[in-house]
Length: 353
Image 1 (cartoon, rainbow, N blue to C red):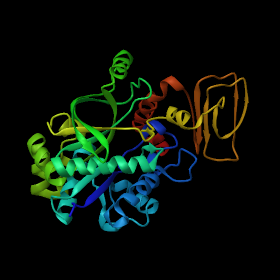
Image 2: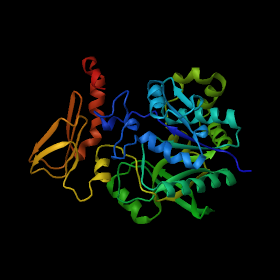
Image 3: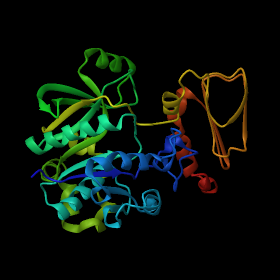
Image 4: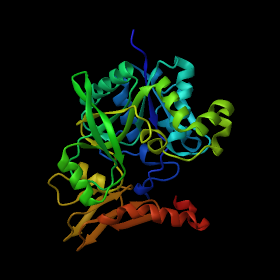
């Protein structure tokens, strides 16, 4: 009998690069950004449901601030499967706590998968087949498995995974040892990675048995694990603030990668909307837009009765939401987070977050 597979959705992110649409109580994962009618977290859950057969085995970890929002987004999720962090301490703490809690319920033989709540995936069937490969690899070898997305352009905004020697074939998919992880390279390095054929984008999806994860975290992040095991969630605000990539994935010798091609985007900022929706259009218009000589623009208005007018603009993002209008050059959307940080310093502007 094969071990149980339990997917856990990581839903504590703030999505600040999608401000002003993404705000404290309405972060990116609660938004519908592709015109499908589903929010990103709903789409993530609905992709996972056929794999496990129902809601009983899907878990979500989020922040205390977003707990009610997750319940509203996913009303069928059992309350016992929703973990609310008292304070955000990055992904290592979230992964460690959720893995320990799942292991308490199902035992350490359970295969656990972690999935960002805010990724876009085109082909749900290919996604499910790839997850099955990863589950088999984790179950049979004790590997820590990550999915590497086949690159389509030399992105400087994604992390990269270098695949090493072949480690087998599971569910008709080739798997490889991981040689190294590289965070957000410069353009020339990204081009060389793609030219080599040995690199994939880091999807942020990883799968392992609970026993493997607990054992490796005890080795590579002992302070984090010791505090959680001895003190429980009450110690959360004092836990080290570190990502799972730095705490575990870049240190363990057990990582394997499965190259995947199911249509993926991490929807990191407003430019991702153009990648998804532009097609042959001059602009991406998610607003009532009147324009003269405007090209390459992304336009969004949350109120369909409002009109956005542009004249003589090129390669800009214009977002109108509530009491904020954002206008930014497309090649500077990464700086939106800097604006959010400035607003945080001004109490009078806190209402905008």
